[in-house]
Image (cartoon, rainbow, N blue to C red; front, side, top):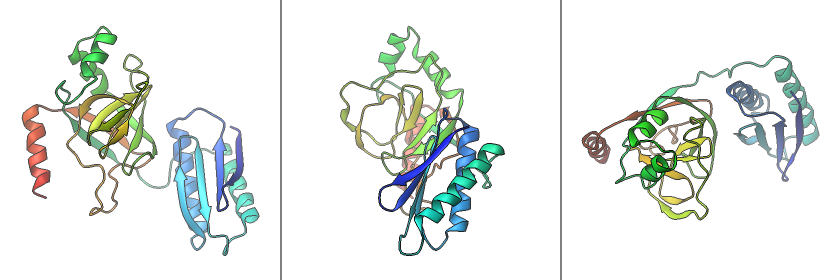
Length: 233
């Protein structure tokens, strides 16, 4: 497994592995992130795990970047020699989803495109366990993979100006839930009533890199019941 370590702006270092994303690589990146937090506890400002990358941001007044780069290269080589799971236990999150054309503007389109029934789309999307590879785009947005190849579909040519919060969507082999109202170009096939980002919670984001996500189909009545419960909280 090859890798490269280089600068990421004035304050950062970026470790990039030259291989396809997979859970075992993510676990190695998470382990490296944890090690960096311990090694540079007084100097590390932030750290971000991506599909195949780890980016570390340091306080330049308290840490020499060359020393940090040598440490990161040594740790990355050790990860190549002995890949393993992250040293923090990850969680499994089950998200309820209402799959219905009234709340999913691309559900019928996808069924027609793939020559399937809507029930087939629902079954294919909800039967898999999805791995959380990365977070980004918006607070609480988590990139999950991978969908059944029969559901893989490209993004919209022109993104929508507004995608409602809770929208469950697909782009290529990825799936995700929009945590807030935002522009977006993914194909919407359902809606989830669960809050994915809440500043009053600790942590604020429900999903983290390395988590497993399951989607559970629910009825319109169940969807409204969850909404009512959350409105009272």
